[in-house]
Image (cartoon, rainbow, N blue to C red; front, side, top):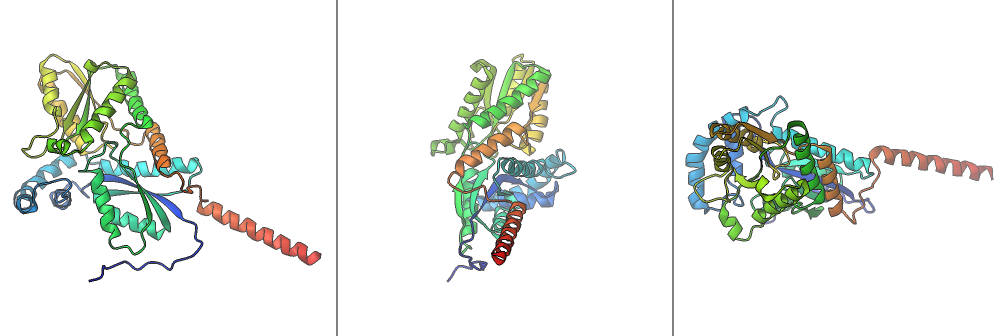
Length: 371
């Protein structure tokens, strides 16, 4: 049986290749409601990259228990951080794409930049369709995951490959695996911390909380754990801190299996009980504020630390659309697009060039007629 390839536009010889960037983030429900969360979680928790339990065992648990109980609880959490513009993660991801496009344009690079979500909308497939319709022939896939993990980064690749199964003519792809030790990324994190400390002073402890994954992924060869610690070390060195002033933890544990340790909330509780009065918490693995940072860290973990005896808890926001971060992101993109002509003229410039060419031809014809 033949594959249902999509109909392609007529091929045009000599057409200059157009370059695009697909900025991919994890995803978000469309609304803070139980029904929206059920749709979102169904897609999210059905990903075999994310949940490596055999399907015959996992799917009855997912549809028989989890999707009956968890959506309402998750909806309440999302409602506590929802904004007038929608989900914070979607708002920041869209702003990052817009800022990246503007920054690259200032540098003379004219690219089609679109953002997409691995789960939810706008989907990766729909945005690749849009890029292709714009005439994009080369796509840099850039994900919002600084540290590589099979559960996140590789899942983006899977979704792109799935889209490609229905394409007769594929764009040329380049794929950014990670940028956990990129100097610009580390500098953007450091500036975020320093700006916070300039306004509020320095804490007794800086805690870096990364998203957790099952510990077995480390033993199976996933580099995520090591890349998180390298990010932390580089940031600590940039800030001039000693090892006693910074801790690395992992949050968002799901299920009963052992995940990467130490866990964030128990660590903050222990700090509060030991007499530490002030902590600052930052989440370097998240480049956009979202449920995991705004609700889990700035609400749940804050309450746990204060209840355990701590006095002051500061959450340092994610990079979001800070200028240093957009500059760093633009440099990561340009490094991976080397050899591609990204300085194609914008539509306005192309039109002006055509008009100038037309005028020069008319002038040449007029001079020829006189001679």
